[in-house]
Image (cartoon, rainbow, N blue to C red; front, top):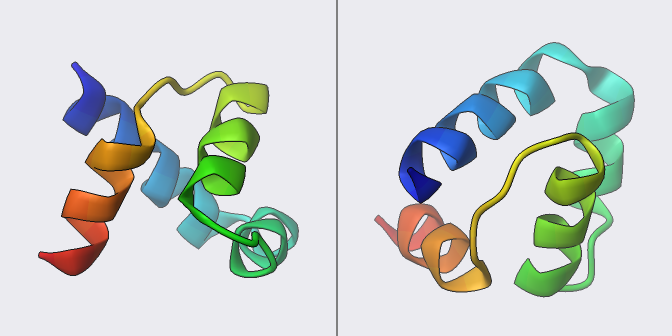
Length: 54
């Protein structure tokens, strides 16, 4: 479930320049997860880290 939430969030980020700017300005993976949660997507910082490395 987490990976599908992350994928959906990243698609939303790609389509929304303002959201992309917020994510690009995030200090760390915890901040990205908080932004995602505010947009209705739930995944862990570990899931984000794994996906961004791979």
